[in-house]
Length: 363
Image (cartoon, rainbow, N blue to C red; front, side, top):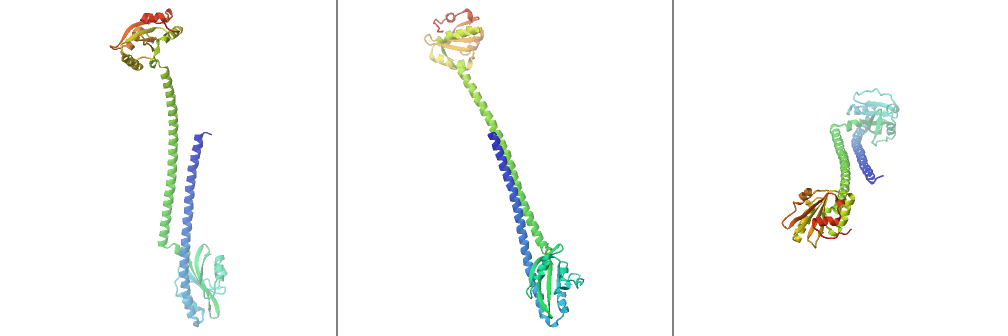
């Protein structure tokens, strides 16, 4: 596997990991918020249950104050004076028999029912069994599909023991307008904050992925450009090495050069003899010829005679002088121009003699 592919897969894994952690964090926050709201609701119900216990205690005190009357009717008269609604009602039982139910309809239809028939749930039965004399307690019980805050107590009246219970539907407390509005607003705020957090994390993950991709593409482009530049530099370097415009050969190498011309049968070849009056003129020519002369024009020097010999390969006399006339000046003049149409007809010494350079060339 390539290094770049490993880095890409590692980056994708990291982004996926952070995205998964963001989802996990949001789910954890939702669970924790729901748990805290539920705990808060239980606290509210507990506060209400304590208040309800106090209400039942007040009723118990009233019953104890009226013990002298000694009849169930006295107890019912006390309960009849109490509030009731569709979400709150009282029950009065003697031992295991249901004696009276005070609800919004003020009905006695449950008269004669046993406690097991009325309190049919396990939690309700456990609550009834836990009641003690003159000690008000409360519990959360279920009856049918509803949950109730139940407060109850056992008291002695007329030689018998009675159980009195007050039941309030939990929804009545939790669906109170102010509390319900606050809970909805709080839940909405938590949802908006967590949604915003998740959106920011996902957006940043996409931005990081896109930035990483762009950076990877840019790095690849830079790598290709670097290789291309290295290749160009190498070509330029090689071009500079073999660029005859930057080379100045001694006249001793002319024989070797001319032999190569004859072997390859290159024609025509024009030889031009330049005379310079000062070293400055020679230096200016050599410097300018790098830019103004073609690569096909090779240069030879004879410092003893103060001349330069140019060999225009593949050019006739007219072409060669046109290429050269831009560089000539008062201190640098063209002394001779000789076009050799067939180099095999002449030796190197013959060519030098034709242009006026009298020397012996090494081979």
